[in-house]
Image 1: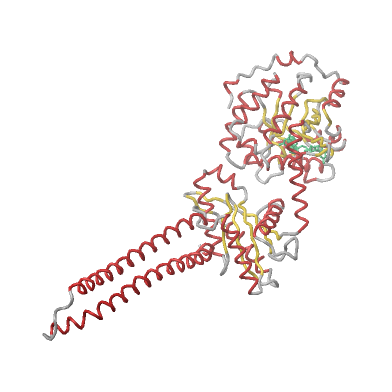
Image 2 (image 1 turned 45 degrees about the vertical axis):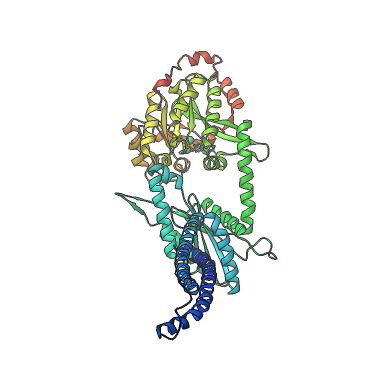
Length: 552
Ligand code: C2E
Ligand code: CA
Ligand code: CA
């Protein structure tokens, strides 16, 4: 790889220079000694040999001859020693080179690793500043890599990493560096002229474009995208102090995080205000983790009204965060974070447990609906966990509905189907939430045995004045009738919508017309006024007969 080759070539050259210097000294010593002795003894003995051969002198002195022969042996010995040593030095430098390569490169992709990118970056910054250039540190993170790994196995994950490295490497300019920082994170370091930052824009765009070409694997192809953050070496916090690799990495990381947040598969340059946003997010995460432990997340309830009879048929539980610091926070703000930081399962289970306790006091005809995140449906133990909660609360499964959105059905449909089947076998009902908002809603209806369709509120809210929305709601109603599925209309905000719905068919309705979602205590008051409380949870629990053995 160009990234490694440039850096390691420099290290190799240095190592070779050191090895050669040792060897030269040895050669010089042996050579000098041999020559001095050879000249000395040879200078004495050779005239005697010549004279003796010419018959004009005595044979050479025995002692000198022996010394001369010894000297020849020494020269041969010295030469062989030189050869062995040269071989030894070469071998040692090869071994050192290999050890250094292992320490400095990532064995999977052959890129530099996290440890070696820092000195290499600093060397590049120094070299570039001598040429009047800056350096761009480009952080590249594969989107949803965990999902690629989970769905296809780690072998395929490795293949994707190697392919990404190869594609980025192909685009790397002269003197550029490429490292794998670990997991699914890569970094490129590229010199550029201060006035030509658009070159880096182009480079980042080419990276996102090249990686986004599907990765072939056997019969199938794997879709990969990356989020990219870029920081420049003149963007240090303290302009007096030269930027170092750690600061550049941090800045690029912050920018990359913004790219993820803005929808992934894009690149952002680092800007200072991003940092405070990130700090806020990290404070939010900490507060959320603590809030879950302290029970700050509570269920709110939205009524579901049977339009034909005008009575309450049940409630949808909607999560709220009563944060002492941030006030009452809605789920659209915290559910995505809970999914990101891996606490959605725990959060949802606590909320469902509490909702089941609340629902024990309701009239047994009332149902409870809960929203389930796609992340939870990736947990093979999800069905068992939910059934355990039902048993602990002694709540009849037939009164529980779980709401899943189309995004739950996008991946690993085999696992989702087996989870849903286990739950259905125990009597839990399944609703397809936000129907119509996704692009493949109709197809999704066939993937799982749903018990209910919930029409997305965007169609319902618009019915009175908008003929198209009314037509869509009519079509969904016919579909529901055809499939024998009851339909809930969400987002019923006024009487005109109710009248329009009644003209179309028979619906269950939810929406602000019947009040905003409310906490358990208020909901109990409402039910009490309607004589819909049953304060003998044991009676309701009689129906709860879920054998754990059948789970999942
Ligand atoms: P959703 O399941 O579609 O829930 C309905 C949302 O629409 C609720 O927002 C509700 O307050 C709002 N809504 C009801 N009637 C009207 C109306 O007439 N007009 C308008 N504009 N809105 C109305 P909320 O409570 O903010 O929940 C938002 C989303 O958060 C929910 O959408 C659901 O997808 C998700 N969510 C809520 N609780 C949980 C939870 O415990 N787990 C998971 N995974 N998701 C949850
Ligand atoms: Ca819902
Ligand atoms: Ca919905």
